Image (spheres, rainbow, N blue to C red):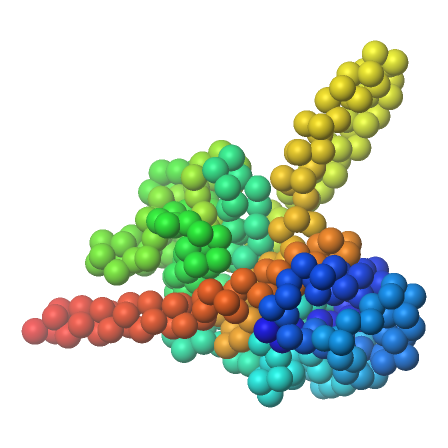
Length: 350
């Protein structure tokens, strides 16, 4: 297993990336190489500081960095020697099996799409972001890669999300729901109604690798057994950031209220174990990064504010996606659906 790590990507780069790589190498012996991509002098200094001397580390120099505020698409030309561009190039050349980055999401998506292309049968890639659910993990798909999606794009997301849930997360029978403003079949916009019709048609054909639950609402993300929640990247990104902001606000408010009275402080100390368990369950650090599904290669996009633990888990996520051969499963199912569509058209013409 060879991983290309964008060492300069993220708010706390390169330190957390170096430490995350060090911890991953200690935990996962099947890693052959982690390429640390970025300014070689800065990376070497950080490796020395954090005592990263593992022989499985190889520094690959990249002279540029895509900043968080920059347009990812525009940097394709202006920063061809950026750390994310060079790291993605290692996957394209076959030198690496996967790329991991906590840097500019737009740049990661643009470079992956341009250099690696999409899988056969997939028109647009999508980011699958994990949300903790009462029944396990619900992947919100798309969480920001494709803001102006079409109904057929969401069909691809449904297949990709189901395959990821089945082969990486171990869900035997994945369920898929469509984000809407009500559970009734007739609710939604023209976009969601068209998507609903396509998903219903696929399920009725018997070729769907998932159970379609129909329309779902915000509460279903946490309360219902749904493994993949479908939406366009614009809406998905708003949902994801709203969830993150709500979690931070609730944590802050709880701390303030506990400090108001001595008895509350005592109660908080007694319940510290429960609070830690909830924090672990809801923190993105333990889930690592989000896979960019639909790309002809493995791409993991980590949170911009990732810690070393988050980067360690992002590397683990990349390993699991490669080992479980998610992409071949996606291509196989998309081919089956395409064949079924052609057969249906021919049948209707007769």
